[in-house]
Length: 147
Image (cartoon, rainbow, N blue to C red; front, side):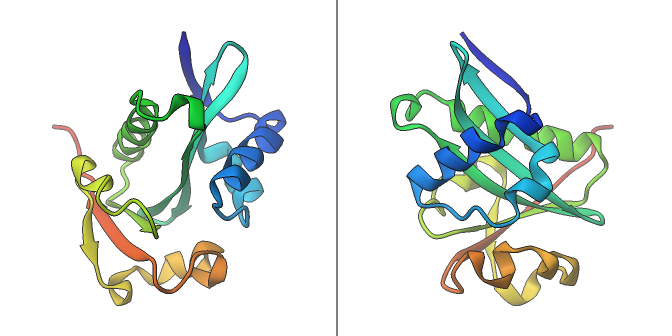
């Protein structure tokens, strides 16, 4: 059975191991771990995704699924959970940078934008200060509040 939950401090090593295995940056993960959601199966972390909060916007980052769990909808569940959290928290938009998954995120409402359109607050993120290459695709999802 798959369980989604908020990351705990003790999860940091497992989250970093998943990210390292996928070639994703580790910079800033520890600082934002309380805003991560993890997926656990049989006591092992098999996926993770997080938000970096900046005012009324957030950066969706570190969406990673272990090799054995890919193709089972785990990543989609994590992303959907974080979009719902952003909506519940009253955020206006989510942004992300990706070098490999630009075709994956439109199903959640993300569209490509120019890097220059990123809110200035997001430039505090390690992702934008060099952890993610300048060639990465930038995407935005407008978070619509529920009536």
